[in-house]
Length: 264
Ligand SMILES: Nc1ncnc2c1ncn2[C@@H]1O[C@H](COP(=O)(O)OP(=O)(O)OP(=O)(O)O)[C@@H](O)[C@H]1O
Ligand SMILES: [Mg+2]
Image 1: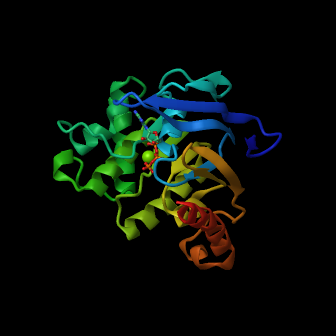
Image 2: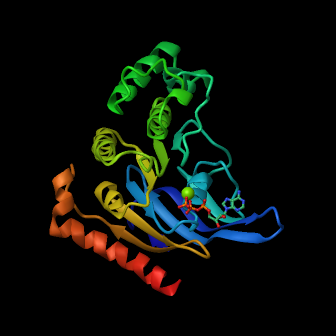
């Protein structure tokens, strides 16, 4: 079992989780097989692995959006059965409501009854500034670039102050400078609170920069191959990316992907 930290009470817990899908043509695809993963409260965990290895599936299971085929998925000791307000989710594509403005999309949580409208607007405006979208509050999603839409989706996930943040390649559509900036901001936001974050990325360097623990997955079937503790001091800065220690983590993980390519 991939226990991230022995002796720490696990907040998110997957025990022998298997998830299979039946495809339109009637075949069975095993997206995840016998995945066990224990995540302590307040940890920042990054998930890395080749396309199709089940990263999004893993997040959707934790978020209660899909049902496991077998095994246990627990959040705070309780079986996950449906989505809750405790969790904020940023999907791989932004899924904004096209008829609502940036601000209205970002304040969707208010409509779910958790925040007053005024509170939601104030918090959303703060996050909209943080992600560099000040001035776009009254625009509609169709008037924004893909990267801008993704930043609105990030605001929406944060507005109701969830204790768990599940982020599926949230920065993939962003230019390199915005991405660097948001990595630093996300780290600050996380350090200031006690959120547990599970963050999917294809960028090894992003995974190292953000993580307490990096979870490396392999495909066919999707499974955990290693959990790596990242022992770099916090707050991490962008120049640390050039350090030998940082490079050591990157090349260790890259080794897995090169081995997969050789095997393919
Ligand atoms: N609803 C579904 N129906 C059928 N198969 C699915 C479904 N969702 C996912 N799969 C399959 O499960 C596997 C894992 O998919 P998943 O989206 O979790 O991968 P991923 O690691 O997020 O990939 P990527 O990096 O490309 O986003 C894939 O083989 C995919 O085809
Ligand atoms: Mg995915």
